[in-house]
Image (cartoon, rainbow, N blue to C red):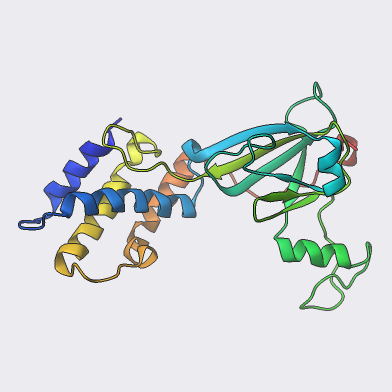
Length: 238
């Protein structure tokens, strides 16, 4: 797999940057910006990490546990949630019962609405009550839950921040799709050479890469249809 310095050299060779002393630094920054953009459009396997933690009494009383604290979930370089599984205790079958992420304010809305009520939407009357059986949410650095007990084991999958640029490091993207980073950084360098003082928006600049990202997503994830699933009560851990 090509390392970052090789990709930088390829980008610099693609664009006439004569007299632009900062071109190398510009390319470094935009290679990382590009991988950030790709990760906002799809799940990159190299950025998906997991961590496990067994709840203690203080966690259950608070109804929450720190995501980043080294004594709790210790999710290093945490960016966004991916999946949460809960086992009744250490030794139970892995991964456990899947919990469903709910946006924080919506989580509060659901808690405030009576169970079984058909009026659970803030925006439409008489909706069916389709709240998740096992919801959780995140507020700041805290993973928030309810109805769990001491000894339950949380396995938290999350997407981490892409690593900073280092010449000798390999980008966190499959080798066969590293060309996407080269294409994105080339677009950025061309725009920078044309107008060095212009403020470039990554989402506008990289929008032309979207079809390439779709093809990578299909390749990596086997063209499977992904949707929410309903777990039969016989598999519940509580």
